[in-house]
Structure formats: C-alpha cells, structure tokens
Image (cartoon, rainbow, N blue to C red; front, side, top):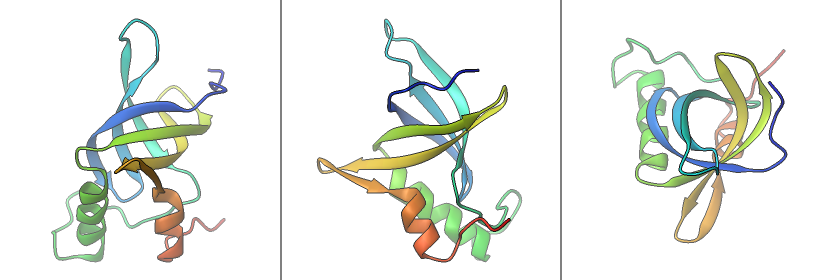
Length: 113
C-alpha cells in the first residue's frame, strides 16, 4: 500500500498499549473513514494487554488514553502493511499540536534495534 504524502487526521478509538492504538482515520474523501491499528514510530512501551492498571504498562496505557481522550490526532504515516500503520502521532489540544511519539521517547520508551 502506498503511503499518503499528506498528514491524515482521526480519532483514537482504543489504546492497547502505550505504543499501540486503534484510530478511526479520516481519509479526506466524502466522509470516508477507516479504522486502523497504528503503532507509534520509534516508540517501544511494555505490552499492556491483560496487564493490571497498577503495573508500568497499565499506568502508561492510562497516560496515553488520557492524552488522546476526545482529541483530534494528526497522523503522519512512516510505513504501512495490510494490518497496521507505523506513524508519528500529534495530538491537537487547544489549537496546539503535542507530539506523542517525542513525549514517550523522552520518557525513555525509545525503540532499540
């Protein structure tokens, strides 16, 4: 699948882990939306699936949920396959954009090869 050359917008529907989201993406054509799994580029957080809220993974999932709650997100795709998109996510709050990837990387959740 070819990547769009523009930034897409959307709404976060679910947060599985700090770096693994389901986003309803506005495709910009006649109110066409697509639900897609989005992984945060350059970010690696603990897997929060089936983890209790008081664990590091659970707390991080709650943090990301709070950051994106009710906000429009701007999605810059980096790579894509049939099941997911790897992207940079900026959260729109009070007319300003907050880079979620940079925030999590600054907190030490940088993907290491």
